[in-house]
Image 1 (cartoon, rainbow, N blue to C red):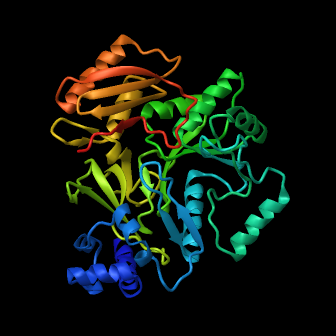
Image 2: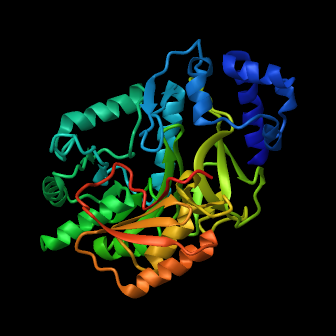
Length: 422
């Protein structure tokens, strides 16, 4: 697979140099030629690509000879939204990778599937539902597009609906979910948990076969909650608007498999290749999007890679032990070191059993813990958190407790967040 990936990389580098103005300039400014990139390790000769680089050089990164088939935009919840151009061939590859994921997860194109995003606080209180079960025309259109044209599938299934949440429509969405009875429910962990609690309060239950979760750090505590609430198997998946689907958890639940035969993944710790089990920044090179190629893109996620070996499921793809969120969200110690949010979330949710909270760091030693109204905080939990924070930031923290109106659902739930610059 490494030889195949290296061959794809060489062809892609040659394409980018000869076609994309931005990369032509980068190579020339560094005194490099495409032939200098022969293996995957050689990509370190090139500088990382940041979101700011793309925004500053947007037109130069686009393929001037190809009209994009689709433009997808990032959410813009952590910084300015970014528009990504997709080619027709790349859309087909994205769909194929989703089909591979679903086959490995044991789902069928006939499974009734619901994608439950958040529509935003100012969206009218509809559900955003589409393609209701039993409506033949939408399904026929999807099959027609699949056979004779390129388009993007959120989930590779014929019976698919989007049921968007906002802060006012949870009752309507819950009733539609009960009526539709999805086999697969796909959403962020915090939204699934919020829906489960509401269903319990209404004295009803939803029993999908599988939950697909993405977009937030899935702690062991949260995963256990979702398994108990829905009596379903939970699978963590990873994706990004910049690339599409990047990986998934297999039925062996031994980490997340990355689509490392279609993307080149780099894991860096302090700028050097990370070791197994070491917290690392992830860089991604897409090898198939001719419309807007991204080389060594800093996606912003901090991850823990595992040893490259064959999984119980039979896959040899690169795996991650965990995704620990955005380093920019992490806490900052008194010496300026950034502490990844993932381990902090794991401690809060799996050790202290906290839910519906947000831990904010306003200054190196000033913290605010927002807790949903109606949720009790035991004195022992606060003491344990203070000791934990003291160990992390190397000084006594000033921790304030505030009540949080949980109906103000954020677009992207960030349970740990620091406004301190490192």
